[in-house]
Length: 290
Image (tube, rainbow, N blue to C red; front, top):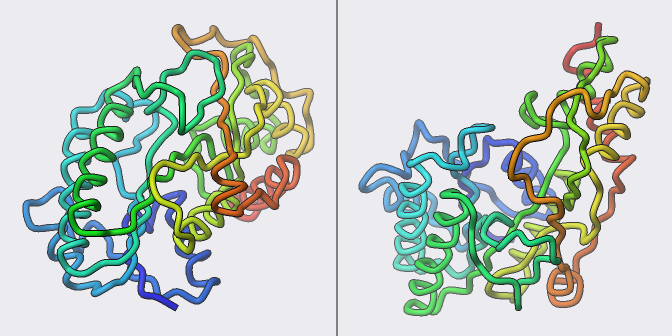
């Protein structure tokens, strides 16, 4: 068992990661932003000193739906991430896993591979994540800190913000309303959030360093996902693909290579798409059992 400092532990992914860490016998220190503001000058140092942790899982970032792509605060989070790793390494931390993003890659419809795909982010969010990785890796090298960079792709599950695809479709169908979407031809690589949490914890316990894609390695179109969510909620016919105009500039395919995750980390998904959607719908029903 180790003591783990978890940032972003109150978020959609963070809550599941906290539970998975505890299930694996770790002591989790997950301070809230009210306790330590990581964007403040001494916030990172204060959080590290209070936690006295051997391991770090850093998930905290600005993620407001629809706004995070070009928000200026992304740059602040990049600097805060580097400061956190510096403080953690200086305090004698041993192992860190930091949350990166598939948005760091060039999106050209080829499979995103850690070893070969160019890092050419299209948005400020991806550029800030890449800058945070580069800075953190320099510090890790200087201090001998074991560091992995978890490139997260697309996630769904209980607790996800209601404006996102799966909860918006499922909630509409549960209420007997139509769920209007775009044509939905875009293909994405989806992981159920509990699986993602398991991947983060397995990566933390491994010796693997550098960038690792956290994904299923399979593509599912937004249309397929929306129809499956409607089916899980009881009425696929209420989902209306093509009812909304497509968003300009959306990449048609973002799918991960997962050889490092499977072969080096030794992790594979346990929960399929249909089961994950069933669990998500069950959670929505429990939250609003009308």
